[in-house]
Amino acid sequence: MTSKENICDTDLSATTKLKNSTKERVCKTVSEPPAHHLDIEDLLSNPSDSKDKSNLDVLTQHILLEGRLTEQAARRIIETGKKFYFFQENKNIQKEKKTIY
Image 1 (spheres, rainbow, N blue to C red):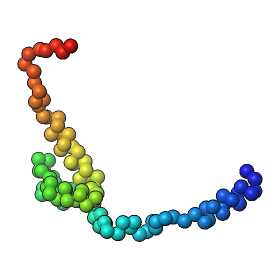
Image 2: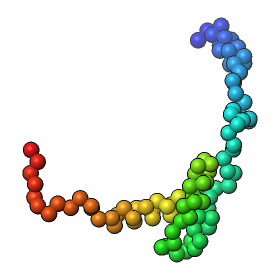
Image 3: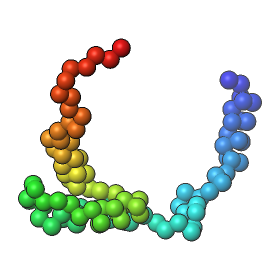
Image 4: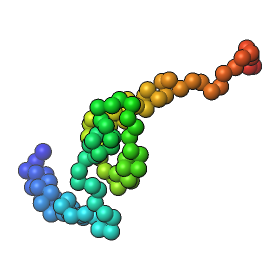
């Protein structure tokens, strides 16, 4: 690089401005997401009970507002879903053997 190229590069970076501020909201009509993460105590009535079902109304509203979950709450939801799908029987049981050509 020549010294002339170095000067041009620094001049461009000094004059380049961001279109939008990084500290203000770009779209002011959209409400901000919830500041708190949804915890497992907010989601379940008895978190220590593994068979306790989550409050879907609370979860749905929080997710629609683009809220976040704590890692513990997210893991509980994933594990519950995993157990549910693991124990589901296949609804498409074929009693006779079929050959498809």
